Length: 141
Image 1 (cartoon, rainbow, N blue to C red):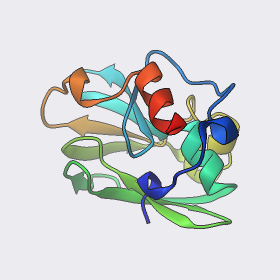
Image 2: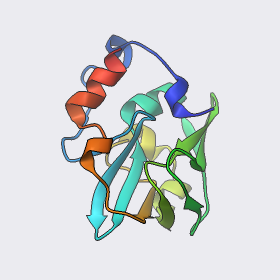
Image 3: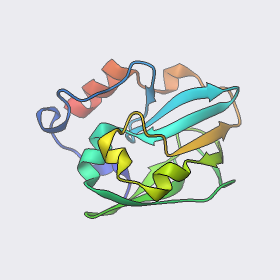
């Protein structure tokens, strides 16, 4: 099951959330933030973590190569397990060991808690991602 299959109202999960202007969002409820050169930090949105519930485990493999819209790993919660959907073509360059050891930190600060750093094969175009306002409009529907 992927994070993009959930549909709940904006009033339940959208208002008052700490969405950041400097993040790029995907329709699959992933955020990325430029780190350096072709590397980006990746995490899940507040909307996604709220749907998942208490996160208990993250499954990722360092060096894993992936393509756009494929699974790069899994997030497990007390409710369900969900794929982390790739925002572009690339590979996992670094896994946040702090998050692996304490995955509940994602529930506490989803937009500050990066799960992994990814190296992308091509420069990204911001037009392929959502800004804060566009993402909030998406989850409002």
